[in-house]
Amino acid sequence: MNRTFMFVALCVCVSIVAHTAHAQVAAQIIAREKASFESWQKKDKAFYMDFIADDGTYFGPRSPYLEVDPKTNFLSKIDMYFEQFKILDFTMYNPRVQMLGENAAVLTYNEAVTADVGGKVINYTGKVTSVYMKQGNTWKNVHGHETMNPGTQ
Image (cartoon, rainbow, N blue to C red; front, side, top):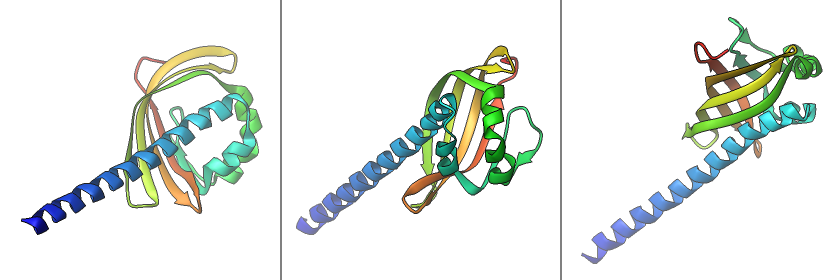
C-alpha cells in the first residue's frame, strides 16, 4: 500500500510539473505573438529580425502564394509594409498552444483587427495559426497562416 501511494504521489507531481512547464511556454509564446502586433504598430524592424526564423514561411490573408525567404522578401521591404498596413487595434481571442516536443509549438487563435490599409480603414476578424520553434533561448516564428473570415473585410 505504501508503494502504491508513493507511485501515485510521484505521478501527480510529474503531472503538475509538466502542466506548469507547458503553461509557462504557452504564456511566452502568446506574449511573443502579441508583441509582434505591438512592434508592428511601433514600426520596430529589429523585433521582426529576431521574431521570424531565417527559413520562415507565411500564408497571408490576401495572397494566394506561400511567402518564403523572409530576409529577402519581407524584412528588406518591411518599412514599406509598415506604411501600407497600419494596425490600429488588435485583439487575440481563444489562444491555444499545443506543444510538439520541447522545442516546437503551434499557437492557434481568433483575431479582431482594425487596420489602415493604404488610407482605408478596415475591420476584420480571422483565424491565425503560428508555428514556433525554439532556437537557442528564443521562440522563433517559423510559419504563420492568417485567414480573414468571410464578409469581414
